[in-house]
Length: 255
Image 1 (cartoon, rainbow, N blue to C red):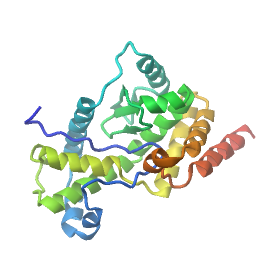
Image 2 (spheres, rainbow, N blue to C red):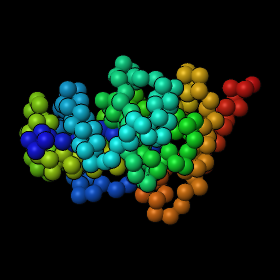
Image 3 (cartoon, helix red, strand yellow):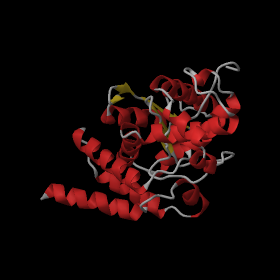
């Protein structure tokens, strides 16, 4: 593992249902101001992006305690995964639960989906379905890839990483860690969050899953307060507005 480049990038999230504002040791102003960073983001190939995401998922798994197949968390997620389906846009999805009190979930563009037991503790299966549908939306709509490109470009500009094919193999573990920090904590725009919400709603409908769980997940996120809410769910727009948007869609569908 010491010689293998590792990354916890391409997420998605992407943190669930919200864009976190923290980027650790990365100077995000550099990504905006540097022409070099923009160039490197544009030259990151699909193959490189997948290689980085593959290594990132492995690194995240190595740093977290994964729920064994015999645990109630894993059994619940297996049921949820069956409902949501095993692929997104032709990419196979790999679902796992991290045993931690943190409330979080994310998905990488290579189909790596992780949900934290802390989130499962506060939500029903249907609400978790809504949450993961949202994360898959960020992947399908290209938001996760763009977040990773920006994080990669920032580190590339800072450290003068050469824009060559197979860049994942030349990045150091420290660089990959910085890219991961920026990608997973990337703040999605208001429109990106709304589009991912609608993607989740449409996915649930397509799979024959009640969409009420999406409303419930937003209501519970809106009820969070303090440091936990501040660090994970600075959502744009607010969870209360997003819950109402889904209620409006449900009402329209009933007409």
